[in-house]
Length: 92
Image 1 (tube, rainbow, N blue to C red):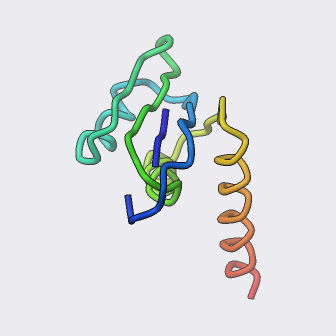
Image 2: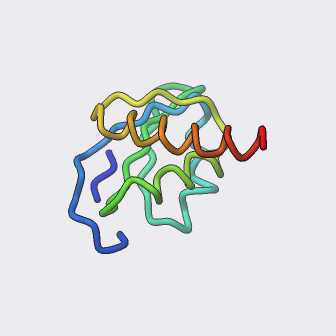
Image 3: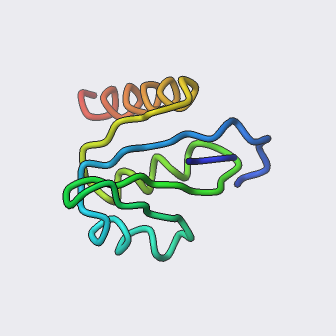
């Protein structure tokens, strides 16, 4: 679950399913204060307390694993917008 830093009102509580072992995710998330909940040997849920979606994007990129946004749709839209920004920079 990810809920709303940076002076922006909370935007929801995303739930991300990462396709990586909990131990590997915990190594990255340990310094951010996030909570990792193992699902099985190869996946886990990531739960953070944030005020905006930018911080979770950075954390997910740092983990470097495939993931699924379980909810909310707003976080999916934010990821799409950020992804398009980086794709444009990569093709310029």
